[in-house]
Length: 247
Image 1 (spheres, rainbow, N blue to C red):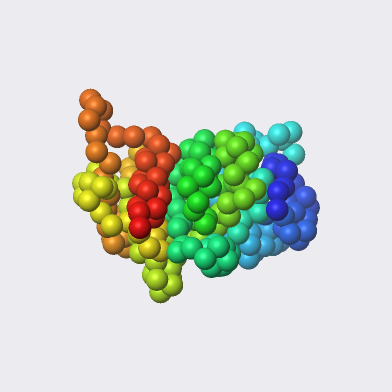
Image 2: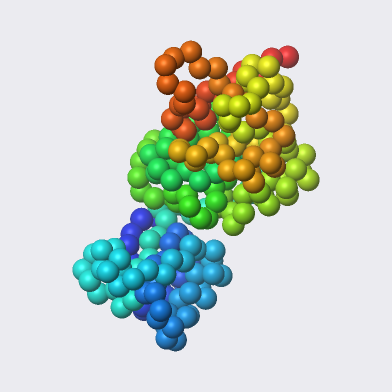
């Protein structure tokens, strides 16, 4: 389901957004404020799984379009999030082994949109992102995905490592992009698989990497030693596509 991404400010407006069922990505609350309406908004945000950040008055002023924030500013999502179960059901419906993208802290919305576009074109059944320290489904992401968000479900989870453990129980195994891994052409990347792509600067975090079964390195022949996160995702995804086509 598509929404119009918007910035909402003011206690009544933000509370109504939650109660109407809008998908709220982030809520910024005035640091130190603990009155009734603010506590109610925080409670509603936790129920929906929205990211809550307590910030000083100056930061709220910068976030507020007209300065009438009353101690709260919220960002709604441009698209509704799916569930991980939706992705597994999609794979089953297509009669295919699950193929998922898991993004460990992709913060650039252009990268996120490009990866969602690649996921769709590669035939992946969904993209999983964490709630914290990661871009959400903003209008920029939707535009960069070139329409892929209409077809590729995106789930947002509280803990990526925990989600991986649950998916392992469903038969999935995981490969992450890492320059210190084996060359991707030497790996067997068939079957139910999750492709893990790390943060633009730091790569895959230690804890998430420990939950991966394999690490895949992309051969580098140039003078620099890394690829953009969305490009790396595309290269590895199409090696998975290639191997799936081999009989």
